Length: 231
Image (cartoon, rainbow, N blue to C red):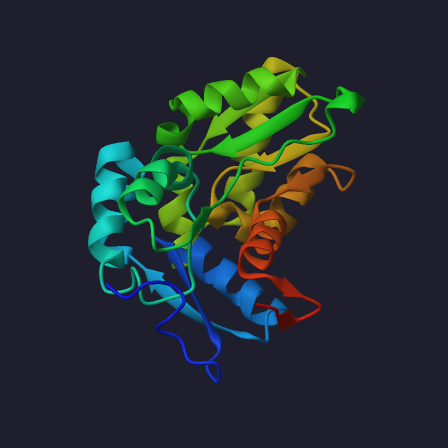
């Protein structure tokens, strides 16, 4: 394995791998390509192991390690565009591959001083992690979690209709009399249906996804300022 960053010549662009198991990773890679002209974005979208990345920590880690093996030590940064993998396995990759830089998607915390009720849209596996429980505890506001694992494959295939989204969201909210002011997306694919979610929840809802924070983290770790790379 070649040590970072000796393998990369001065005349070459930065190389960033975006790893995910579905369309959310494609969306984030598109977002990075729009923002970063100094980097080549390499998409490693592991459709074959999509189920493994939804089951739990161990299966997600195994799938990621297998898919990323050709890139570890060969690129400037690997980004996990997957909340479950980011929450449960980043420390493992930090320790095992010390010469490779990694970042992951973080759970976005709204302004806690506002004490506004927050709805969180995530997956079952993510909602069962210690990291998620700690996140909920830190929010210190009224929260409601909705897990919609079935939506992910439909989003990937472009088959999730606005009607399904509205019925799925409003039914759960109306049953519990919950009126959220913030919506936290803890799944990259959910960013593809922001407009439909806003329509279902009202246009005053504030939606938080992980794209902007992951972009800022990438710029910080790669020392990118003003669109330029600085040693």
